[in-house]
Length: 181
Image 1: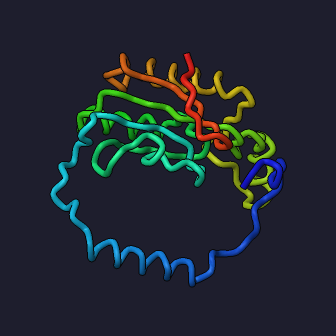
Image 2: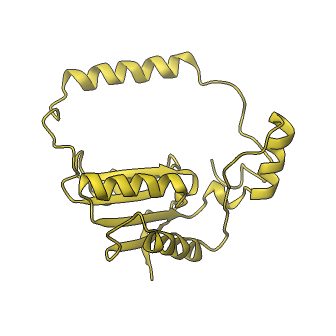
């Protein structure tokens, strides 16, 4: 969904996906299992890499970075924001599963750029009668957002290996990946 289709306060179409979509996915999983040959991969990722990225469905992290199954932890959420849960996942990834390098990937045309934190929180309060315990941080300056995310990782006492933290912006229109310094 592009930002032209979304505006602040506008929700996507309501309703669950068609049952046919879920059944198609289950059938795909059966076909995958019939040809599955990765059952002997070790638990730690081979490249000792954790990638934090947005959940946007246009980002195929494995194809974009040329990664194979078992090579990296790919941790995703809305906006690729370094939330407490991302810190938790990174702490486990490094402290228990041996990753050492961290790559952040934010992207252009992100839905988080059109969702205002206070406006979204207020709409949730109105709809469900309760305020969420989490934030919806937004930023129109992608490079600054990446820098803040890298800083949050580097200053977290829970992340022991912070010498190899890198940030990037992926352009969804061109497929280009640009380093943020």
